[in-house]
Length: 242
Image: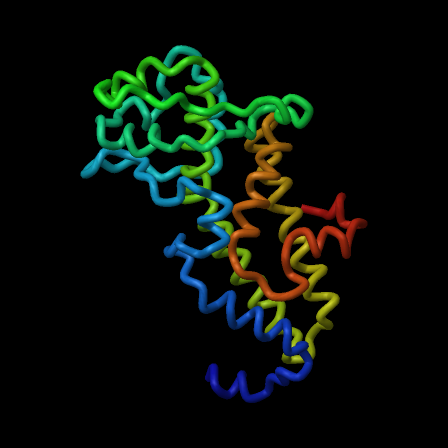
């Protein structure tokens, strides 16, 4: 049946550049984070979130929002950092690159670079972890938050968006809608997700939007179907219906 349906499609209705982008998107394995874009945008992509052999319950967006209500972690380690052993802590603490906390306001962020001091090689990693100052602890907790959101809460959304993009382009090949209409339908889809996240994250919604955009942008999308392109093309959909 699928072959019969496919025989009625006309790929020529979709520009070659869009078709090539669709093929690249479908070929990308969402379980493999080792793309150049992911590694560049998220340098902690391969660091363990838990001690070897332990498991944590994967986050849904509401779990990430609940975690943020305990932020900043003044004088305490938030989960799962409170379960780390020395080896896990060392992998995170040995990163000496300057860290910019995404939780700071834009004006404040320009001067909020926090770098971990090179520690005494004889000082145990767990001791270093438990004696981080306030800014260091906040920066580390933010990095862990980013990775949990990226690895646990966002893959289902990215997968859903890929399905919607594929369906929208397929409808174009069957002549049911124009490419412009396909893009517009995706802009509405993206806006609904934003509205959903707005309800979940409340006062943190603005910087969460920016972080989610970075996560989504690290994956392959057909030409004209990235979030920034759609927002620029359809600014009138800011108040799109749910």
